[in-house]
Image 1: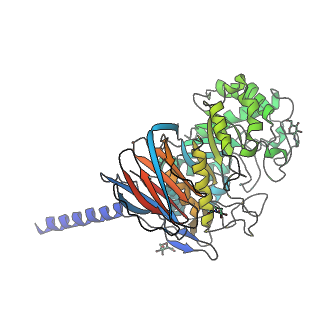
Image 2: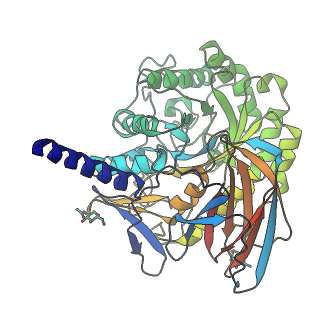
Length: 527
Ligand SMILES: *[C@@H]1O[C@H](CO)[C@@H](O)[C@H](O)[C@H]1NC(C)=O
Ligand SMILES: *[C@@H]1O[C@H](CO)[C@@H](O)[C@H](O)[C@H]1NC(C)=O
Ligand SMILES: *[C@@H]1O[C@H](CO)[C@@H](O)[C@H](O)[C@H]1NC(C)=O
């Protein structure tokens, strides 16, 4: 009897313990950065998390807030019908009215890239820290990334330049082989991401430089284009290289949702510093039409299986580059989407808002996806600005603006970098990212921008649909996005990048609530 009682007691304790652990959230361990804002510290035994969103109580919404003063996904319950009407410092008020019957594009998701630098940094720390970081990005206890880019061989974020076939004139690709970067630094982490994700993660591949021997300059970097004529043996060999890549990853159990034709083909015309390929719009069109499209289709990777995206470069040159492709019916048989990068556009109010609208109207069947973004903090001595809240605001601003212009998703760049935002083979330092790792102390630092993306990726599940809203007034540096999730719940994400608070009044079809959005904060409402 006594023995049974002891077991009973143990069972009760175990259940209670499980409940507290399950409902408890691991909060951010805040570290203030001198002359900046804050970052969150993770180590081998601790990393902040974000458990699955609980359904809100009937008549309530939940709001999560991250801000410049250091709160991360701070949770507050709000009752519909209540007007808190708290005094706001500069007296700004805005009413956002949602019309969920008016629907726009569906969302693929949010994510970042499995670069070599990312994998190298993850491999440089305790496995349990690396796993916690992958889980932070992909799992239901993290921010639930559902799209990821996989570079095909080396990029400027690799510690050496290479391709999958560096054997001169091997046009038949007899020596094609994945490298240790794939087997040690990419595949294990991709597999973990696929395993822990509650979603079907959409992976897409992108080549930087083809094998140097395929190029006119015989180098990975600098001004080179593919040798010979479009349709000829070098172009065809490069097309076959894509199929070899897909099959090599498939042999490791990894299948791709998409491909881009070439990373930053425009930049390839003038970049001496990194792995690139110069392709003009008409050349990319003919490569797709004569080589890549038919080759992928023949190998079983046609548009029904793998989404081929053109361009994959900065918005500034988009129209000039893609118009010859989009106007060509033969080429468009093989094309599903347009990929673009935020550079030059990411900072607030740089490019005309109308460009993506214009494309969507003219080519409604061709999707638009942001496939790369990071802060080019060249002016910073270390190439990285740790704990910088402003970067979070730039990301949130760009995501809201682009999604309001029919974009289907938003993909950042390196998932993890060192303390100088590297390693890189051709530069001593790199560009800002969401997580920096210091192997010397066994810690990783989640930057404010990690949480900025999380305000979208955690809430806007894949296949959510953007819904209409109208605001009774607009302010500079204040923006709002509204979507409906596949489970029918509504989500509103708001950014206040101003120096004053705003009273936000949200009106749904039948009810309303109001809440303050403080200066320099991002909020996600869900109900
Ligand atoms: C890891 O972080 C946790 C939480 O801050 C801390 O309690 C623990 O001591 C740290 N471990 C090491 C080895 O630094
Ligand atoms: C880029 O490649 C095209 C041929 O595809 C060539 O005409 C052009 O001169 C190249 N640009 C540069 C800067 O080399
Ligand atoms: C808007 O944000 C930009 C960039 O952070 C800043 O320079 C500007 O002062 C802000 N304007 C207002 C009205 O808040």
